[in-house]
Amino acid sequence: MPSLETLPDARGHFGPYGGMFVPETLMSALEDLTAEYERARHDPAFQQELAALLRDFAGRPTPLYFADRLTTHLGGAKIYLKREDLLHTGAHKINNALGQILLARRMGKKRIIAETGAGQHGVATATVAARFGCECIIYMGAVDMERQSLNVTRMRFLGARVVPVTAGQATLKEAINEAMRDWVTNVRTTHYILGSALGSHPYPMMVRDFHRVIGLEARRQILEREERLPNLLIACVGGGSNAIGFFHPFLEDETVRMIGVEAGGEGIRSGKHAARFQGGKLGVLQGTKTFILTNADGQIELTHSISAGLDYAAVGPEHSYLRDSGRIEYDYATDDEALAAFRTLAEVEGIIPALETAHAIAHVIKTAPTRSADEIIIVNCSGRGDKDVSQAAAHFGI
Image (cartoon, rainbow, N blue to C red; front, side):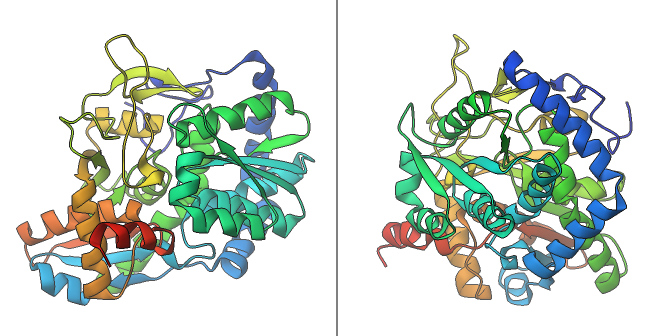
């Protein structure tokens, strides 16, 4: 097996996963993007500008916060939160958006498109487009626009045009379809800032690399605080960008266990979920080969999650590879568990998490009490819950 830190190969494969499964029209754009990214990643000027933007514009480094009261409340392991929710725009998504807007500028592309589910990637893309004076179009499912109306308004204030997508389930998968149709039509002038570690090569690799800063910081911070590595890392997994960025710098640390938490929706048996590793199959969706929820005829299954950012039928290809290798474990949390975790973190620590993050917190609530007091858990607090307050309030009758 190759080193987990060296993948993918030159054609974007993580073992049997990944690759480039796109219309011929997009191959030239993807090859150009791959070549430009390869130049940029070895360009000190690019790296210095990105580091400066992450520091001065986005607000890095983010704190590693010891959740003292949550630790006491649950008993067992010490719990730390990596506070990506404190970044500008309110989530980890800004890391990738800043990296990609610099690539777009290098390629001379001033028209920016993106998809969004929970709206955080849309807000991050609209933010960087405004910062660099680019036209910005965001595709968003009509269902997600309704449940994430705050982020729709934020995108519009930032100067983006938000295009509702009404096809299919009118959620993230359909938004990606529309963004890809746009890109095929306008490929010479447009850069697609894909928001997660999925899609065709080079996106899974590139998005992972732009988010590795999360894990690099967390690794350095925990060594400073505790003088040792954590026992367990936990993150939510939709497409998988926050999780792969968090996990990747720890892959060679054999003593560090890692768990990705998918959306269990209303329960696996109900069929109303988005947990791809709970019965998913190998297939191709929107540019990549990976685990996908399909029916017996190979058609994409309908998905469900209370969290718009986790409500997607496929998972990033590197996650599929790491799951097969046994390096990362994957579990799920249901809607009810995530909502309970949302309220617990708010009431116990004074931190309102995104519903996506609440899935990871739900797993912490289950696992921390089973571990000894000298063990350390770090959970990636990938986003804040402003966007989800109305939805949670309706559920709790507040």
